[in-house]
Length: 220
Image 1 (cartoon, rainbow, N blue to C red):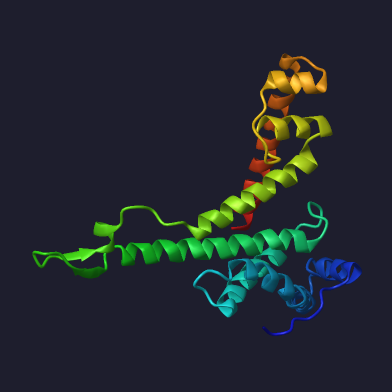
Image 2: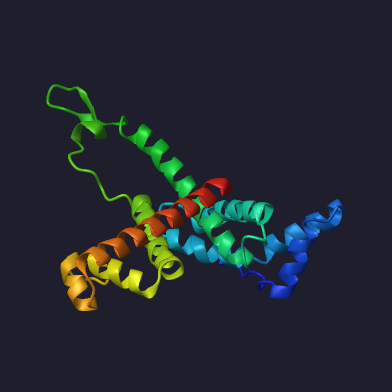
């Protein structure tokens, strides 16, 4: 794989983002180009997650770069600390959208493509013989991303007690799901109080997910 330029320093990035608001079109375009070029390493890193798809790495990087460009165009420093974190989601979204669209088109074509004939000589296609759904790699990747978002939101949105309640209640640490009564006994509080903590935590998580989806749709 080709060698990419090193990322900008925090100060260099700040100056480039500041230049994006410049009235001088030439300076603005130069800053945008620099931000894209210096973040191509991030694109390549994210594209590696999709290396087990049928897409070539060069194609994945090309599509990911589109997401990076969108990120540079829509980045708001007032809402985000660093461009890299924001761009990572944009790049990921662009790659997933491309794979979903390609999978849908390929499925529509291949399911009706003749693959042989039956005993009477009639053409049969994949749809005729497909008995069970095959693992969907794109859906698996989206599931993994949602899980990552889940644990990330637990760290940023919940208190330690709320995290502990949800972890025990839904077996998030790999163990069994624990009842509210058992949690109350472990923590020395009533079952009804555990229920209130759980409901409050779930509402915060829901709000966090909605915010992430809204941000993702705004970049799509």
